[in-house]
Length: 104
Image (cartoon, rainbow, N blue to C red; front, side, top):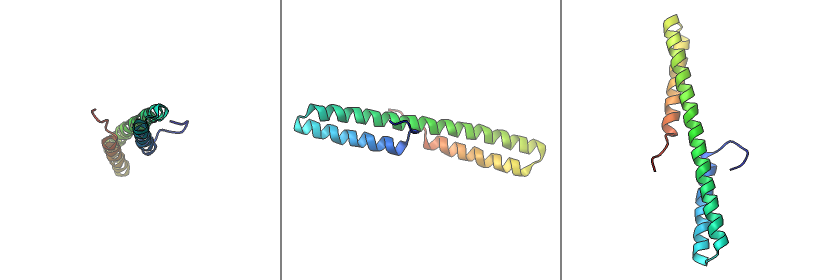
């Protein structure tokens, strides 16, 4: 993982690449490739999970903020604020669903 934000795509790429390198190492008996592949695979999995957690938390934040805006809009009679809040809440819910942690 680099100094950039974690990425699900980059994490998957490194995970798959690590698995391929590890398999080549296993088939050829090259321990350095096997070990390097295992390390890259683990790094990729960690990056993927970090990106997933970040996305889930962002979804929670959007959902809570959207709910707040929706309620405030409803109470104050501001239909635009209520509608904007509903949209943000639904966006957060979708983001949470897309980043739901998998059970291993």
